Image (cartoon, rainbow, N blue to C red; front, top):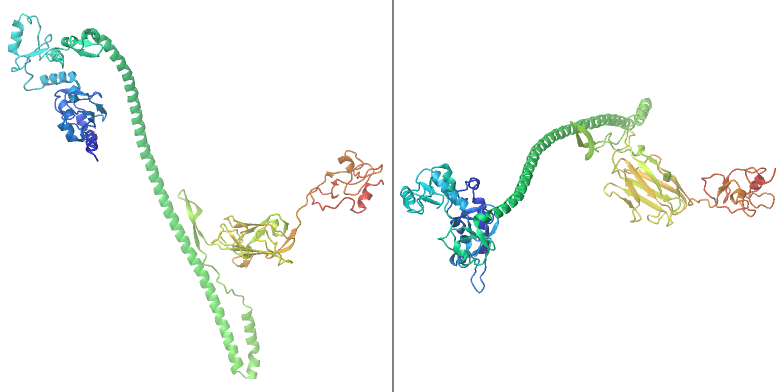
Length: 606
């Protein structure tokens, strides 16, 4: 950092060093030294300081002098070379950059108001007063308004004895009216012995009599008392405009203060609401946590009880089985023929009874206990909470399928079906992520290469598991379409290319679902009717004799088309392209004239 930058930083820090109570001092004291003003100077920002205090301020920017090799912006060079005054300083109060005149702080405008106020405060303060302006020895007790001089007792008597000043009426300094008249005459800075009594219009500044015959020669001028009205009125107009801005700014500041106060109040209120909400939410979460832990503990006890009961039953059955086996083996090994024949009935009945006992080799309950933190768990203490225990497991035997695509499909058209996973009680699972396996196999063309569009083979093996979240093919890398609805339903879609019968196998957790495998029939693409659905050719063609109909009917008089619906021609509305009577039917695309003679019988006259 350069010396000038350091000086600027120091100057910027002066404002922070001025205490708040100093800024509110009386107009007679300098804000920097806090003493009575001594040679007060007014800055362009209208803040007054002692000239000595201003000279101690560091320059904010320095005017460089051409032709010098030394650093003219350094603090030392400015202090040592007064021929290079600072260009500007920062006001210690408002932090405004103030440009200085060529003569530096000495050429700044003197604050005579401050000087008068200092004089008045000195007079009112206890202790020694001001000195006499004439003898400079005695204490001044009188003031001559005409001479604007403060006089001691001796000089006051001499002032009255002199013929020139004998008519001057002096007032006592103790007189309140005299306090505003104690100011000294303002002397010309260029001619210290002359008082400023004139005003140069061209230079717009007060001048003395010597100035108008010297530097301001031929400049228009007048007495200050004569031009004060014009310049005073101009300043009053500016004052009015400024006062409007002052009122506006004060109103804006009051509004800002009001908004700031409202913000503080609102922030405190909202902070209280946040704390209340957070405390309540914490209590709700803690209560929900305790509920979940209790549910988990109850679930553990329930499962352990069921497993213990199943274990006791199996242990008792095993003991009975072992008893029967050991007894029978000992009988057959050690018993005589007669002993075997005598006891065989009892033993056989027992073994038959044991063999008929129905038991489950699988545990009666599963360890499928999961925690779903994102699932809604209702409300607790008036707050919505999340996180539930998932104990339900899917039962493949209770799962069902829906959709026409499970049994029939059209060639090269997308078909679909939906799998609904249910638990052991038959209720639909409220979550997804189950491992589902779907296999579609062509019954007749197992070696064909046009089974499904997804992988161009007759066997399409769809495997979905929550770890992939997609469908995977055992014989192709192409992924068919599957959508886990995350509510226990799975939507499958496929597009067959080959006609014929297919077998669809659907497994959940490695077991076939209810009804699996299913038989799928793939038919030709649905054919739309190319003709018109009419009552007869006569009406649809506007009476043209050459118009024909696929029903094969004709009319007498040379008409090649049918006349169903007219007198002597019974029949019903039908398609002109195939003769079918169902409007929403599929068109078999039978050429006209190839139908049976039944159509002809409907159109001939009875």
